[in-house]
Image 1 (cartoon, rainbow, N blue to C red):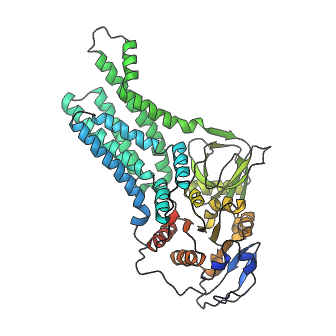
Image 2 (image 1 turned 90 degrees about the vertical axis):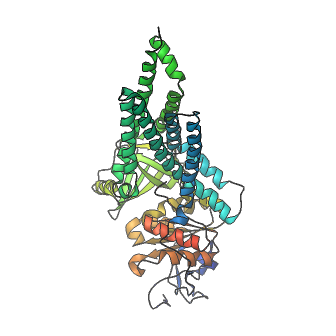
Length: 484
């Protein structure tokens, strides 16, 4: 193998001729552009060409989160603006603070509905809007829809605080007021654990507080609405329990709470329990879980072993003919936290989970938006190859893949063979060549390949580095949005 770079740093300046299926013809030859030798490995290739001389422009700001968070804050502002309208109505007596709080709570819960998210992803991908950055904006708006959730949740707390203050000022301490304050306290705790400082460091705590806190807050809100109607009935001569229940059913606040409760209940109605679980572990730290089910390109599955703690993973493989036509899906679970570490250790010891709970709905993730583009560059690190594999095995998207991983065969076993079988897969073994400059790598590859979009599946730091660098260079770039 020739290495034209004395520093030992690979680059991708000579990859343009390989997109999308040129790796096989390029393999084993000296590249005319840089003199590097390209070695084929099962159809994919491993290249050590010289470093590109064209560096990132001085305008690239790798530290700024504004470009990658633009649409998150846009949704945040849209919901905030709607609440200014509610404030105007409240001043004129058209809506009460309590009703405004419930409307915001409905938006906060509804924006997490998996069916709605799936519909929005599909609408964005098949949108007739064709401008390069226009298409990017439409898809990214869907990816960062979580901004609407966060803004509505905070507005719920603000309106409920106002409702509590007005209630205590007008009526003093009442049962309704105490229940409202209890609801407000629970929501405030939920919002606190959702802040990045806590959410990313104590993610399991965040999940539990959101789940149980959400149920508790909803129960308290129902109790408050019920008490309010029974208290009001005391001032109506001859009112019966049936009258109170009828009034309660017609109460707009109670009706909003009923809709919210249905939205909360829907995911639990789609649970699937299966005892057919296969698991294998690679290098003691990557688990491949296989179980009955179906999953499309760019989707993910939510799983649990106890129905209490839930985790989401991208669908890596789908065999529609398995399990007598029921189909199966496989997930790759890398040992990155307490839960995943325990799972890897458990499977390595031969203790395969007997059963698993899965949500039947497989919502799309940001990788679903590959379908919106003609040719895409995908940069994946480690287990980030998982959501890329369905595209590799299906051949239904024109993509070029750069997989950055240490000892791919030793760490991922057969998965590495599948990934490298793709005719346009470039494997960067960090054990041999060290860690690359992700931003420079993405820009060089996108330019050389003529890619009209870049997708990065990595950790938070790596993803933000690539996305910000590409956006600064005018290249549409997508990555996971941890706060969405």
